[in-house]
Image 1 (cartoon, rainbow, N blue to C red):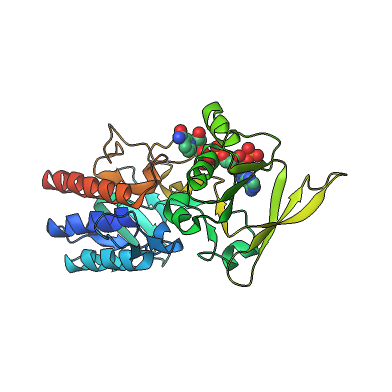
Image 2 (cartoon, rainbow, N blue to C red; image 1 turned 60 degrees about the vertical axis):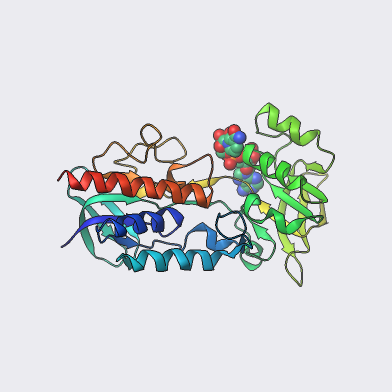
Length: 310
Ligand code: NDP
Protein backbone atom coordinates (compact mmCIF):
# COMPACT_ATOMS: atom_id res chain seq x y z
CA UNK A 1 0.00 0.00 0.00
CA UNK A 2 1.30 3.46 -0.91
CA UNK A 3 2.33 5.72 1.96
CA UNK A 4 1.99 9.49 1.51
CA UNK A 5 3.57 12.10 3.77
CA UNK A 6 0.94 14.81 3.27
CA UNK A 7 -2.42 14.09 1.70
CA UNK A 8 -4.84 16.86 0.69
CA UNK A 9 -8.46 16.06 -0.14
CA UNK A 10 -10.38 18.45 -2.37
CA UNK A 11 -9.61 20.76 -5.27
CA UNK A 12 -11.37 24.00 -4.37
CA UNK A 13 -9.53 27.13 -3.25
CA UNK A 14 -8.71 25.58 0.16
CA UNK A 15 -7.22 22.38 -1.28
CA UNK A 16 -5.16 24.09 -3.98
CA UNK A 17 -3.88 26.79 -1.62
CA UNK A 18 -2.87 24.15 0.92
CA UNK A 19 -1.07 22.34 -1.92
CA UNK A 20 0.75 25.51 -3.05
CA UNK A 21 1.99 26.20 0.49
CA UNK A 22 2.90 22.58 1.19
CA UNK A 23 4.60 22.23 -2.18
CA UNK A 24 6.70 25.33 -1.59
CA UNK A 25 7.65 23.89 1.82
CA UNK A 26 9.07 20.84 0.02
CA UNK A 27 6.41 18.41 1.28
CA UNK A 28 5.51 17.08 -2.22
CA UNK A 29 1.83 16.68 -1.33
CA UNK A 30 -0.62 14.35 -3.03
CA UNK A 31 -4.03 15.91 -3.74
CA UNK A 32 -7.18 13.99 -4.59
CA UNK A 33 -9.56 16.18 -6.56
CA UNK A 34 -12.78 14.64 -5.31
CA UNK A 35 -16.27 14.70 -6.75
CA UNK A 36 -16.20 18.16 -8.29
CA UNK A 37 -12.75 19.06 -9.67
CA UNK A 38 -12.20 22.77 -9.06
CA UNK A 39 -14.86 22.86 -6.35
CA UNK A 40 -18.04 24.89 -6.02
CA UNK A 41 -16.67 27.90 -7.89
CA UNK A 42 -16.84 25.93 -11.10
CA UNK A 43 -20.65 26.07 -10.88
CA UNK A 44 -20.55 29.84 -11.27
CA UNK A 45 -19.37 31.99 -14.16
CA UNK A 46 -17.28 35.03 -13.42
CA UNK A 47 -15.55 35.82 -10.11
CA UNK A 48 -15.22 39.50 -9.36
CA UNK A 49 -14.45 39.47 -5.64
CA UNK A 50 -11.26 37.39 -5.57
CA UNK A 51 -8.46 39.90 -4.92
CA UNK A 52 -5.86 40.35 -7.61
CA UNK A 53 -8.16 40.38 -10.62
CA UNK A 54 -9.41 43.95 -11.05
CA UNK A 55 -11.36 43.02 -14.18
CA UNK A 56 -12.74 39.79 -12.70
CA UNK A 57 -11.79 36.30 -13.80
CA UNK A 58 -13.65 33.36 -15.27
CA UNK A 59 -14.29 30.96 -12.36
CA UNK A 60 -12.94 27.93 -14.20
CA UNK A 61 -9.91 29.96 -15.28
CA UNK A 62 -9.23 30.91 -11.66
CA UNK A 63 -9.37 27.28 -10.57
CA UNK A 64 -7.15 26.21 -13.51
CA UNK A 65 -4.62 28.83 -12.40
CA UNK A 66 -4.66 27.52 -8.82
CA UNK A 67 -4.21 23.98 -10.08
CA UNK A 68 -1.28 25.00 -12.30
CA UNK A 69 0.31 26.84 -9.37
CA UNK A 70 -0.07 23.75 -7.15
CA UNK A 71 1.48 21.56 -9.86
CA UNK A 72 4.34 24.00 -10.34
CA UNK A 73 5.45 23.33 -6.77
CA UNK A 74 5.31 19.58 -7.14
CA UNK A 75 1.77 18.58 -6.09
CA UNK A 76 0.75 15.17 -7.38
CA UNK A 77 -2.89 15.76 -8.40
CA UNK A 78 -5.05 12.67 -8.78
CA UNK A 79 -8.63 12.22 -9.91
CA UNK A 80 -10.08 9.98 -7.21
CA UNK A 81 -12.42 10.45 -4.29
CA UNK A 82 -12.17 9.12 -0.74
CA UNK A 83 -14.96 6.73 0.21
CA UNK A 84 -13.81 5.48 3.63
CA UNK A 85 -11.32 6.51 6.28
CA UNK A 86 -9.71 5.17 9.44
CA UNK A 87 -8.30 8.09 11.40
CA UNK A 88 -8.14 6.19 14.70
CA UNK A 89 -4.33 6.29 14.77
CA UNK A 90 -1.44 7.47 12.58
CA UNK A 91 -0.57 6.58 9.90
CA UNK A 92 -4.10 7.35 8.71
CA UNK A 93 -5.75 4.93 6.31
CA UNK A 94 -7.95 5.98 3.38
CA UNK A 95 -9.87 4.06 0.75
CA UNK A 96 -10.44 5.62 -2.70
CA UNK A 97 -13.23 5.09 -5.22
CA UNK A 98 -10.70 3.73 -7.75
CA UNK A 99 -10.30 0.76 -5.36
CA UNK A 100 -6.86 1.88 -4.15
CA UNK A 101 -5.87 2.41 -0.50
CA UNK A 102 -3.28 4.77 0.92
CA UNK A 103 -1.86 5.72 4.29
CA UNK A 104 -0.62 9.17 5.25
CA UNK A 105 1.20 10.96 8.08
CA UNK A 106 -0.80 14.19 7.77
CA UNK A 107 -4.14 14.93 6.20
CA UNK A 108 -5.81 18.19 5.13
CA UNK A 109 -9.55 17.83 4.55
CA UNK A 110 -10.83 20.41 2.05
CA UNK A 111 -13.82 18.54 0.70
CA UNK A 112 -16.10 21.57 0.73
CA UNK A 113 -19.85 21.78 0.96
CA UNK A 114 -22.50 21.26 -1.65
CA UNK A 115 -25.41 23.64 -2.05
CA UNK A 116 -28.72 21.85 -1.89
CA UNK A 117 -30.93 22.04 -4.95
CA UNK A 118 -34.63 21.28 -5.29
CA UNK A 119 -33.92 18.35 -7.59
CA UNK A 120 -35.65 19.75 -10.69
CA UNK A 121 -34.29 18.73 -14.09
CA UNK A 122 -34.51 22.42 -15.10
CA UNK A 123 -31.98 23.37 -12.40
CA UNK A 124 -29.40 21.29 -14.28
CA UNK A 125 -30.55 22.58 -17.64
CA UNK A 126 -30.09 26.23 -16.65
CA UNK A 127 -27.12 25.86 -14.29
CA UNK A 128 -24.87 28.88 -14.94
CA UNK A 129 -27.59 30.33 -17.21
CA UNK A 130 -29.77 31.90 -14.56
CA UNK A 131 -29.64 29.25 -11.83
CA UNK A 132 -27.25 29.93 -8.96
CA UNK A 133 -26.77 28.92 -5.36
CA UNK A 134 -24.64 31.94 -4.45
CA UNK A 135 -26.02 35.48 -4.49
CA UNK A 136 -22.69 36.98 -3.44
CA UNK A 137 -21.04 35.29 -6.43
CA UNK A 138 -23.62 35.94 -9.11
CA UNK A 139 -25.95 38.70 -7.88
CA UNK A 140 -24.03 41.39 -9.68
CA UNK A 141 -25.15 39.98 -13.04
CA UNK A 142 -28.79 40.70 -12.18
CA UNK A 143 -28.58 44.44 -11.67
CA UNK A 144 -31.96 46.01 -12.41
CA UNK A 145 -33.42 42.58 -13.24
CA UNK A 146 -36.00 40.34 -11.60
CA UNK A 147 -34.83 37.42 -9.51
CA UNK A 148 -36.28 34.79 -7.19
CA UNK A 149 -34.68 33.30 -4.08
CA UNK A 150 -35.94 29.96 -2.76
CA UNK A 151 -35.89 29.30 0.99
CA UNK A 152 -37.15 30.74 4.24
CA UNK A 153 -34.09 30.54 6.49
CA UNK A 154 -31.39 33.07 7.35
CA UNK A 155 -29.42 32.36 4.20
CA UNK A 156 -32.43 32.98 1.97
CA UNK A 157 -33.28 36.22 3.78
CA UNK A 158 -29.67 37.37 3.64
CA UNK A 159 -29.42 36.55 -0.07
CA UNK A 160 -32.75 38.23 -0.81
CA UNK A 161 -31.65 41.38 1.04
CA UNK A 162 -28.32 41.39 -0.77
CA UNK A 163 -29.98 40.93 -4.15
CA UNK A 164 -32.52 43.67 -3.39
CA UNK A 165 -29.58 46.07 -3.36
CA UNK A 166 -28.88 45.19 -6.98
CA UNK A 167 -31.97 43.83 -8.65
CA UNK A 168 -35.17 45.62 -9.59
CA UNK A 169 -37.38 43.04 -7.85
CA UNK A 170 -36.78 40.01 -5.64
CA UNK A 171 -39.34 37.27 -5.04
CA UNK A 172 -38.69 35.12 -1.99
CA UNK A 173 -40.30 31.74 -2.61
CA UNK A 174 -41.15 30.08 0.72
CA UNK A 175 -42.84 26.69 0.92
CA UNK A 176 -44.36 27.24 4.39
CA UNK A 177 -46.76 30.02 5.51
CA UNK A 178 -43.94 31.52 7.61
CA UNK A 179 -40.22 32.24 7.52
CA UNK A 180 -37.82 30.18 9.57
CA UNK A 181 -35.20 32.94 9.70
CA UNK A 182 -34.31 34.88 12.85
CA UNK A 183 -36.61 37.79 13.71
CA UNK A 184 -34.23 40.50 12.61
CA UNK A 185 -33.71 38.88 9.21
CA UNK A 186 -37.46 38.43 8.75
CA UNK A 187 -38.08 42.09 9.55
CA UNK A 188 -35.39 43.15 7.13
CA UNK A 189 -36.99 41.15 4.34
CA UNK A 190 -40.60 42.02 5.09
CA UNK A 191 -39.88 45.75 5.28
CA UNK A 192 -37.92 45.88 2.04
CA UNK A 193 -40.19 47.28 -0.70
CA UNK A 194 -38.21 45.48 -3.40
CA UNK A 195 -38.81 42.04 -1.85
CA UNK A 196 -42.10 40.22 -2.26
CA UNK A 197 -42.50 37.07 -0.18
CA UNK A 198 -44.50 34.32 -1.86
CA UNK A 199 -45.58 32.09 1.03
CA UNK A 200 -46.85 28.53 0.56
CA UNK A 201 -45.32 28.47 -2.88
CA UNK A 202 -43.26 25.75 -4.56
CA UNK A 203 -41.28 25.87 -7.78
CA UNK A 204 -42.03 23.01 -10.17
CA UNK A 205 -40.01 24.10 -13.21
CA UNK A 206 -38.14 26.85 -15.05
CA UNK A 207 -38.55 28.10 -18.58
CA UNK A 208 -36.75 30.23 -21.12
CA UNK A 209 -35.22 29.97 -24.58
CA UNK A 210 -32.20 32.04 -23.70
CA UNK A 211 -31.38 31.13 -20.10
CA UNK A 212 -33.96 31.48 -17.35
CA UNK A 213 -36.91 33.68 -18.27
CA UNK A 214 -39.28 32.51 -15.57
CA UNK A 215 -40.36 29.89 -13.05
CA UNK A 216 -43.44 27.69 -12.99
CA UNK A 217 -44.75 27.97 -9.43
CA UNK A 218 -47.64 26.52 -7.46
CA UNK A 219 -49.43 28.19 -4.57
CA UNK A 220 -50.89 25.80 -1.97
CA UNK A 221 -49.97 22.69 -3.90
CA UNK A 222 -52.54 19.93 -3.45
CA UNK A 223 -55.07 22.17 -1.64
CA UNK A 224 -58.57 23.06 -2.87
CA UNK A 225 -57.41 26.59 -3.74
CA UNK A 226 -54.23 25.46 -5.50
CA UNK A 227 -53.09 28.00 -8.09
CA UNK A 228 -50.42 27.45 -10.73
CA UNK A 229 -48.81 30.37 -12.48
CA UNK A 230 -45.65 31.57 -14.21
CA UNK A 231 -43.35 34.04 -12.53
CA UNK A 232 -41.20 36.00 -15.00
CA UNK A 233 -37.64 36.20 -13.62
CA UNK A 234 -34.10 36.41 -14.98
CA UNK A 235 -32.33 34.67 -12.12
CA UNK A 236 -33.25 31.79 -9.81
CA UNK A 237 -31.25 31.52 -6.58
CA UNK A 238 -31.31 28.49 -4.30
CA UNK A 239 -30.86 29.17 -0.59
CA UNK A 240 -32.22 26.01 0.98
CA UNK A 241 -29.05 25.08 2.83
CA UNK A 242 -25.67 23.49 2.25
CA UNK A 243 -24.43 20.03 3.04
CA UNK A 244 -20.79 19.80 4.14
CA UNK A 245 -18.97 16.89 2.53
CA UNK A 246 -17.81 15.36 5.79
CA UNK A 247 -19.65 12.03 5.93
CA UNK A 248 -16.57 9.83 5.44
CA UNK A 249 -14.73 11.55 8.30
CA UNK A 250 -17.62 11.71 10.74
CA UNK A 251 -16.77 8.66 12.74
CA UNK A 252 -13.46 10.33 13.68
CA UNK A 253 -13.69 14.13 13.59
CA UNK A 254 -16.12 16.24 15.60
CA UNK A 255 -18.87 17.95 13.63
CA UNK A 256 -21.83 20.17 14.41
CA UNK A 257 -25.33 18.82 13.83
CA UNK A 258 -25.29 19.81 10.15
CA UNK A 259 -21.97 18.05 9.61
CA UNK A 260 -19.56 21.00 9.52
CA UNK A 261 -16.21 19.86 10.94
CA UNK A 262 -15.44 21.57 14.24
CA UNK A 263 -11.91 22.90 14.53
CA UNK A 264 -9.96 24.22 17.51
CA UNK A 265 -9.44 27.87 18.44
CA UNK A 266 -10.01 29.49 15.06
CA UNK A 267 -7.37 27.18 13.55
CA UNK A 268 -7.72 24.28 11.08
CA UNK A 269 -6.78 21.71 13.78
CA UNK A 270 -9.39 18.98 14.20
CA UNK A 271 -8.05 17.61 17.47
CA UNK A 272 -6.58 14.54 15.73
CA UNK A 273 -2.78 14.99 15.48
CA UNK A 274 -1.81 15.91 11.91
CA UNK A 275 -5.42 16.07 10.64
CA UNK A 276 -6.72 19.49 9.56
CA UNK A 277 -9.91 20.80 8.01
CA UNK A 278 -10.03 23.90 5.82
CA UNK A 279 -12.50 25.66 3.57
CA UNK A 280 -16.26 25.23 3.44
CA UNK A 281 -16.30 21.77 5.05
CA UNK A 282 -15.46 23.56 8.29
CA UNK A 283 -17.08 26.94 7.60
CA UNK A 284 -20.84 27.37 8.03
CA UNK A 285 -20.51 31.15 8.12
CA UNK A 286 -18.49 32.77 5.34
CA UNK A 287 -18.32 30.28 2.44
CA UNK A 288 -16.15 32.51 0.27
CA UNK A 289 -13.31 31.39 -2.01
CA UNK A 290 -10.86 33.85 -0.52
CA UNK A 291 -11.68 32.72 3.03
CA UNK A 292 -11.28 29.08 1.99
CA UNK A 293 -7.92 29.87 0.38
CA UNK A 294 -6.76 31.53 3.60
CA UNK A 295 -7.75 28.57 5.72
CA UNK A 296 -5.99 26.21 3.28
CA UNK A 297 -2.80 28.19 3.81
CA UNK A 298 -3.20 27.93 7.58
CA UNK A 299 -3.72 24.15 7.35
CA UNK A 300 -0.56 23.69 5.26
CA UNK A 301 1.49 25.74 7.74
CA UNK A 302 0.12 23.62 10.61
CA UNK A 303 0.86 20.39 8.70
CA UNK A 304 4.41 21.49 7.95
CA UNK A 305 5.05 22.16 11.64
CA UNK A 306 3.49 18.85 12.64
CA UNK A 307 5.48 16.83 10.10
CA UNK A 308 8.71 18.46 11.31
CA UNK A 309 8.08 16.89 14.75
CA UNK A 310 7.89 13.31 13.45
P1 NDP B 1 -31.99 26.52 7.07
O1 NDP B 1 -31.94 25.04 7.18
O2 NDP B 1 -32.11 27.33 8.28
O3 NDP B 1 -33.21 26.95 6.14
C1 NDP B 1 -33.45 26.31 4.94
C2 NDP B 1 -34.70 26.90 4.33
O4 NDP B 1 -34.88 26.29 3.06
C3 NDP B 1 -35.95 26.64 5.16
O5 NDP B 1 -36.82 27.74 5.06
C4 NDP B 1 -36.55 25.44 4.46
O6 NDP B 1 -37.95 25.40 4.52
C5 NDP B 1 -36.17 25.70 3.02
N1 NDP B 1 -36.11 24.48 2.25
C6 NDP B 1 -35.38 23.37 2.50
N2 NDP B 1 -35.59 22.45 1.56
C7 NDP B 1 -36.51 22.99 0.71
C8 NDP B 1 -37.13 22.52 -0.47
N3 NDP B 1 -36.87 21.32 -0.97
N4 NDP B 1 -38.02 23.33 -1.09
C9 NDP B 1 -38.29 24.57 -0.61
N5 NDP B 1 -37.72 25.08 0.50
C10 NDP B 1 -36.84 24.28 1.15
O7 NDP B 1 -30.69 26.87 6.19
P2 NDP B 1 -29.89 28.23 6.06
O8 NDP B 1 -28.84 27.99 5.04
O9 NDP B 1 -30.81 29.37 5.87
O10 NDP B 1 -29.20 28.41 7.48
C11 NDP B 1 -28.34 27.40 8.01
C12 NDP B 1 -27.84 27.84 9.37
O11 NDP B 1 -26.95 28.94 9.22
C13 NDP B 1 -28.99 28.33 10.28
O12 NDP B 1 -28.73 27.94 11.58
C14 NDP B 1 -28.94 29.82 10.14
O13 NDP B 1 -29.46 30.49 11.26
C15 NDP B 1 -27.44 30.06 9.98
N6 NDP B 1 -27.19 31.29 9.23
C16 NDP B 1 -26.95 32.42 9.95
C17 NDP B 1 -26.74 33.61 9.32
C18 NDP B 1 -26.47 34.80 10.13
O14 NDP B 1 -26.50 34.71 11.32
N7 NDP B 1 -26.21 35.92 9.52
C19 NDP B 1 -26.74 33.72 7.85
C20 NDP B 1 -27.02 32.48 7.19
C21 NDP B 1 -27.23 31.32 7.87
P3 NDP B 1 -38.72 24.90 5.84
O15 NDP B 1 -38.67 26.04 6.82
O16 NDP B 1 -40.08 24.65 5.29
O17 NDP B 1 -38.03 23.66 6.31
